[in-house]
Amino acid sequence: MRKNTTRIDLHIHTKFSGDATITPKLIVDQLYAHPTIKGLAITDHDTLQGYQQAQKLATIYEDILIIPGIEVTTQQGHITILGVEEEPPYPSTIEDIVDFAKKRAGIIVIPHPYRELGIGNTAKNIQADAIEVLNPRSTHKENMMAEELAKEKNLPGVSGSDAHQPRQMWTTYTEVNTELNIDEVLNAIKRGLVKVKRYQQDYDLNAKKRQF
Image (cartoon, rainbow, N blue to C red; front, side):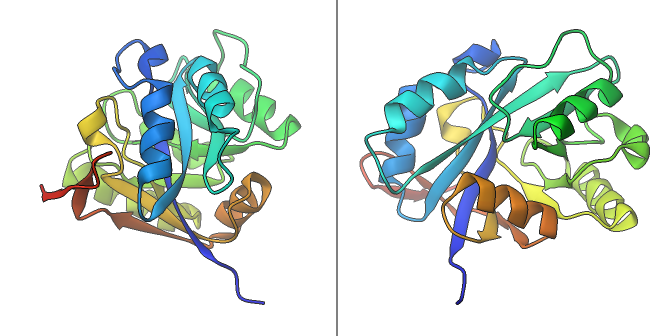
């Protein structure tokens, strides 16, 4: 049986990150209204509050997926956990976070490794499950370096908008060859059944599209 292709923005922040303005309600409303992207991971800085609120709001919809995520600030830089509904202790080292995630069946994604607050070449020694190779807030060179890192480590490359403002949402996303189910999505990411994509048009709740 052929799997469906699910489009997911794997890196979105809400107002609970402290440096973002997007509300959980806006995320859910726009995700439901979007014609093609039907899943996302809320990856706020060091908190699950945004995910928790969005998940409650999303329960009335059957065809959208909210993945629990958290972009953790470690002593060495940022690292992202997906699939865990528990906040790790703070402060923590990268090794602490990897151990925390693995014990809870979560996956580790290295976000924007070569941008400010990325962990850089430290990622070469981390037991990660995927590398963020396309981040619209990173430079072309930084994204290319991340792609080379993924190839070197033989890890899947994923993408997310890293949106902090509403207009930044959905600018890039990941195509996952699986059904709209958290466990299946996480497993597909680990297996490399993914493609990174750049969305060519903005989309808003009024169903109007406008070129960048």
